[in-house]
Image (cartoon, rainbow, N blue to C red; front, side):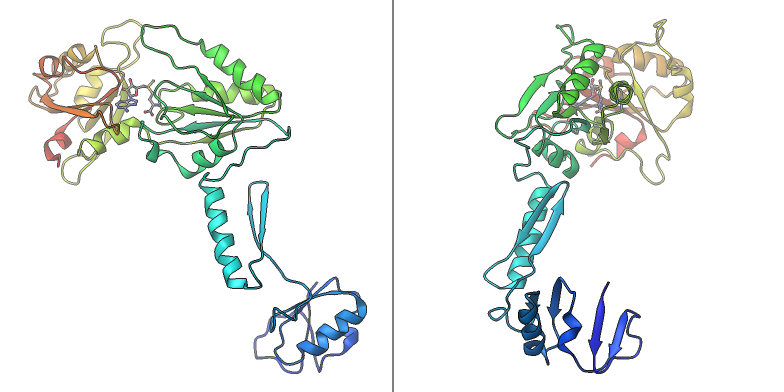
Amino acid sequence: MVDVVSPAVVEGFPSVNLAVREFLPSDVDGAWLVLACTGVVDDAVAAACQARQTWCVRADDAALSPAWVPAVARVDDVVVSVTAGRDPRRAVGLRDALALSLETGELPLRRSRPGAGSVALVGGGPGDPDLLTVRGRRLLAGADVVVRDRLAPVLDLPEGVEVVDVGKTPGGPSWRQEDVDALLVREALAGKRVVRLKGGDVHVFARGIEEVGACVDAGVPVEVVPGISSALAGPTYAGVPITARGVTQSFSVVSAHLPPGDPGSTVDWDALARLGGTLVLLMAVGRLPAVCAALVAGGRGSETPVAVVQDATLPTQTTVVTTLARAAQDAAGVRAPAVVVIGEVVGVRR
Ligand SMILES: C[S@@+](CC[C@H](N)C(=O)[O-])C[C@H]1O[C@@H](n2cnc3c(N)ncnc32)[C@H](O)[C@@H]1O
């Protein structure tokens, strides 16, 4: 309820409870907080409030004001109120800076008292920590437990955060997916804020939906934060536009973890060869000779340019530029992780 008392109003003044007359001390009866911003009768308003022991904020003179309104920021469940030497603009500037630091995860947001547990699946991007989203950073700043993949970015985490590495090392020991799902649910049900930090995007060949499903089935609140996939960042960091006007109007992202001809593979390599456009392959190291041969057999030109980007976005990034005919030989030394880009866009690389 807002009551306005004023001797005059401009045309078009919004229709609030409006009394067009001089101020009367009884106008503040029953109020809990009064904002005196008339510039004319603030002394009288303040005196009327004082007599009734009602809080009054004077806009005209901070020194005379019995109360101040702080500048307030709310970020998640945190409220920050700032007063700054009775200087409202200074308080607003500080409030905005604090809100930004909270939103970007620069300030410690971790709870020290137990609360409701939750899981956030965060796409960590392809490796360079700068490519993590702001939302991801904020969730990490409040996390009690971080469950990370091998290819997730390596980050400085706040002190005291428990880190569980569930990375699947190629050829080495690895966590079973069911055990990762169970870990997320168990920690959240114990009241912890869990961040499941994954490499690239949460849903690009990453079994994210299984983890979401486990949380939903267990009644655990779950949030998903997309990340920059290596399928997009790899070409970009190698100077290759994934599409380019006049060059290609489509791109396909394909997992090559099973080679062409493998009974378990559901990828139609012949169709991909005919489709044209840009082809981005993930998990292709070791299968590249077979994939290139299948594409050429399916009708894609053997001189189609190919770029193989190893360790994309990391200081160790290297790129091999070759063709479908020569890729097996030229990229023989490439190690995982690598993204393979096939198509005419590689030819307009800058
Ligand atoms: C299991 S998939 C996960 C993909 C991930 N969810 C994404 O969106 O980037 C792993 C594959 O992603 C690719 N990959 C991930 N990070 C990479 C990087 N920094 N450089 C090159 N390839 C990368 C490699 O092809 C690797 O074999």
